[in-house]
Image (tube, rainbow, N blue to C red; front, side, top):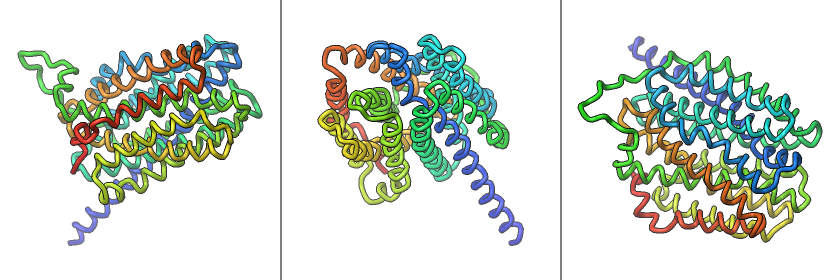
Length: 396
């Protein structure tokens, strides 16, 4: 009996140990990366970039992930998560220092390319680490911790980044946040030994990554993820420009974006309760409709308080889909192909995140920044069409 109690206590301590490491490392990473992303459009504009050029710069964040996500997922499956996480953090810190060294649009271009690579490598590695736990309850618990830490880092990052940029400028702020990112390296060193997956010997027919799309439920999970990330990326890329054109300061822009992330924290905390009370497909459907509606009415307001309120509601709606999509994706993937499948999911996400900012940046020269939000709202709203059919994957 004593040994059983000791074993149970050890499991509880191990669980707490992992949750703190996941939370600390992910919060630091998102604090720096998410804290700098709203500054990139403003910094680029200050350096003389047009809206079209800003759209291209924002899309560069997704350039390498678009082509490398699947390959990176396969590598993580083979070598485990620990080393890739260290590499991701190192690349991320370096990428944010580049614009300080090269104070021009070329430096911003290079920074976004490297930063995007570090972000996708971190996400694949961390989600693959979480997916390596065999019990679904433990996986779901860690996914929720990961999701909350993403939202928490995204909350404090823009807040501090906005205030710092007003005081010391964009490039110095980026460099400071890059240096802070290196502080998360010790937490990665404390992770459990890298979890490798046994890769089955190749069969007569070579298995292709896109074969995973033959799983209908997996395609639906990817669709959810793409819609949610698209709405978030458009907001981060174009809201600072919309607010700045109305005379809102960097500090206030940071506060408004932080309200968006703060709402993401709140909804992730109460999401397990919502899932018990309502059908998951209903929750996701409502969240997509609300997000699209917010985009459609955003350009109608310039009052800071109203912008903050809409940002908070948008954060609630965007914070619903991602945790459920990640959990569903991991549970549906073959055990030996979790990293690969996550890489495929991110490749699909990055395709939309790469193409859309470029197209919307070009459209802004014709329809204006307000028109960009109208177009985005329409695109997002289409994701709610026949949503019960699309969302069978996340029903109980």
